[in-house]
Length: 275
Image 1 (cartoon, helix red, strand yellow):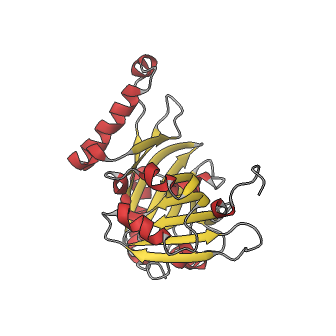
Image 2 (cartoon, one colour; image 1 turned 120 degrees about the horizontal axis):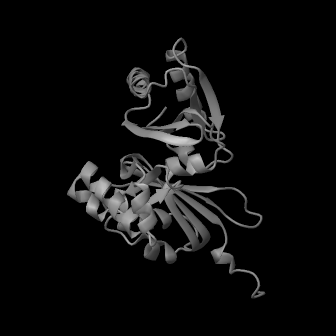
Image 3 (cartoon, rainbow, N blue to C red; image 1 turned 45 degrees about the vertical axis):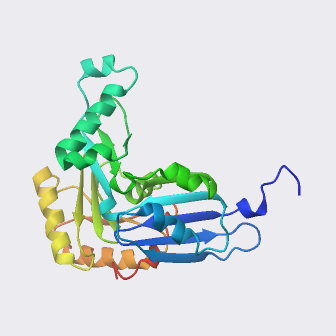
């Protein structure tokens, strides 16, 4: 085999979705075998070190070109991090002060447990606010070492963040992203993030979701702005949930469906939680 080409066993893409109590995988082999393969397993929400390899072992190969891991539900904490003062920003050449500031906000919000949570900052445009993303499920796990034995390339990111990154978001309005057991809200104002919030709920309980959404928008004073239901291509379950929520809010909210540019994760398998 030519050395210019990767070994056949290293080819293909595997996507993994980590939810509150399940792990779901979708593998797309390279070459002519275009039919995707799926796997799923339950987990207790604490031992990803053992659960992730167990899930991947269900697939026919052991190594891939790329693995994309998307973390959903209660394992991801999203916060709006207020911008530091301009005087502190000018002194923070290395970014260490920004990291310490973010860690302090995390611990102030979630307590001592947040000291060990890995986090990153997104949408940093000083002196604007940024999105603070912390993943508690990775606190005691060297995810890079784990994935290095299975793939040549890998990424790990929150499901909601991945959807936002693959969507042409409106300049202003309320963007809603539904996960199996979580609803995420992103409020935008002329291209700037002004608020981020989450609701842990059964996606079939439209009354609770509608009441929470109206309360958030009232507190923000954005009742006149449009609502956007962010939808993955081909995800009929989420489309159905969006229609029911639109109907419940028909006389109160301007509602629009916002499609993402591509399917991010194997969420269509997760029917039990959201149907």
